[in-house]
Amino acid sequence: MRGWFLLGLVTVVVLAVAGVWNPWPGVWDWVDRSEPISEPDVIWQQRVGGTPKSVTIAGDTVIVEQRTRVEARSLATGAQLWDRKADWAAVAGGDRDPVVAVGKLLVKGYEVLDPTTGATRRRDGDAVAVWTYRNLLLDAHCVEATDCTLSAWDPRGTAPLWTAFLPGVSTGLFADNPDLLGTRRLTANRIDAGAAGPEPVPPLLGFPVDGRVHVVDTATGRVLQNVEPGRDERLAVVGGRMLRISAVGRDGACAFTLTAHDPTTGKQVWRRTGINLRTADSAGCVQREDPQGARNVLIGVAPDGREAVIDGYDGRLLQVNDEGQKLIAVDDRYALLRTADKRSIVARELGADRTRWTRPTGEKNGATLTPYAAVLTQEKPNRLIALDPRTGKELLVLRTSANALAVGPAGMVIGEGREIGYVRFGAGGSGTAPGGDAGVPGPGSSGGDPGGDAPGGGDGPADEDRCGPKRELC
Image (cartoon, rainbow, N blue to C red):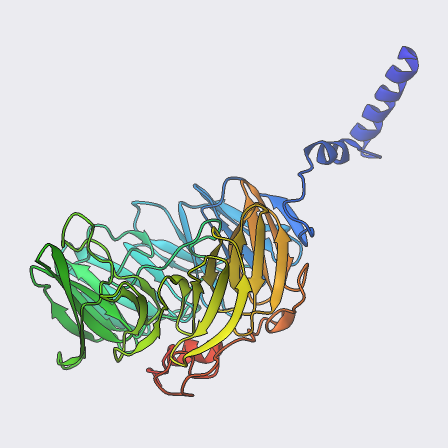
């Protein structure tokens, strides 16, 4: 038996060396095969080179950012298309025109890559910071510490759309998407904060420079305001307005005042008092955080303890929770609330005083809203659930302990450790993908004033890219 075994082994080695037949890759694949990360099984599952820092669906590809590398995989098969060394990567552009910006930490410059081939479309050697959006890419160049230029690019453009001059940039600005003065998103366990991908650029951006705020119009590049906050103030740029948030200690508590100003004229356009935007820590009234919210809405707490969603543009109360309800996700269209008994999640249409759907759930469920789906997490048993945000119809129900990493028009990338996989909407659920495989999102706007001020107005995500979430650019 030993002789026959040795003869067989020698024969296999000879055949492998001769290139006739090599069983070893198949044997190794069998030994190294990973367990499925979900049930129902994903369309494909791959082990990437390192634990992902971020995952983004970019057209027909999946961009995986790791600690020192970035790689692209086919959305259809999971096969690796390219990889390269990079300390950071960020996706700009929409579903049909995405690009990938890559660079190295603490090193000036970046490259704009084609997500399918990895070919360099544009190279910059001097930028100190890059911001990526669905319809714009911004970069900053500084000749000196007090002489900087902000440039706006079409994601696939070769010449800047406009340039603006800033007297320096914050020392914390480097690499991709440094913090600007806007809102803080609500987060959830097991759902990546960037799962929705790049957002449309806001009409105004607030750049912090040496204790002052420079407000830039993203349509023209005009610097509209150069404002220094007061001693008890924090500034934020939300919904096309510059907000002054005042917090003053009074009778053992913080008294909050929120005023919104037209950035062009500097005039006050609306004012609210007593709304706590959670910008001050519990130790006092010093404001160290941006207000909570998303796009052009803010989340605050009224004097009676109930949470409210406020329109940053005109100050309207778009949603006021019932007593005991808790906001767990919000965007310009909807708000997801956990009921007081913690047994259900309710979807409310902002500004319409209407409940879209209700779903029974557990106390520890998390949720987030993306343009394509509302994603819910469940524990004991572990689940990932994707719903149509407008109707609550199930798009996907997975039995898995994996995280939701990226959500696209037709499906979702999930991951656990170095394992990532893609599953299409409709797998394990009763619904179909919004927009199907064509990549056209279905649940765009719902309700509100068509073309008016109500969130959700307009003709859906494609129109929002051009006109802004409140059509303010049109």
